[in-house]
Amino acid sequence: MGRADVLRTIRDAEADAKATLEKAERDASNLVMKARADAAETVSKGRQDSDSEANAILEKSRAASEKEAAAVSSEGDSELANVHDSGEKNRTKAIDVVLSNFHQS
Image (cartoon, rainbow, N blue to C red; front, side):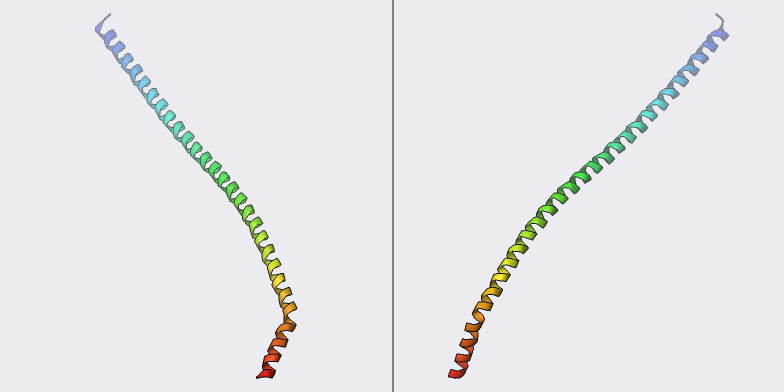
């Protein structure tokens, strides 16, 4: 094998090595891009899942609060009716006391 053949073989080997290196760099770059895309998708899905769970918790709490508010409102309405009824019953007595005190003075 002559010197020219050896140099050609070296140049061919260098060209093959350069092509292999470029392919490896492209593959590495593609892997990094895919990993970033996968990570972004995972983060996005995690946010969606946590938002859904938070909304479910809020809805459950809201329903419980509305139920409790309705019970308190009902109890307040009942007490208000009792006060009104008591006032109705005592109105005559109150009028009599006021008129009696007015006549005595």
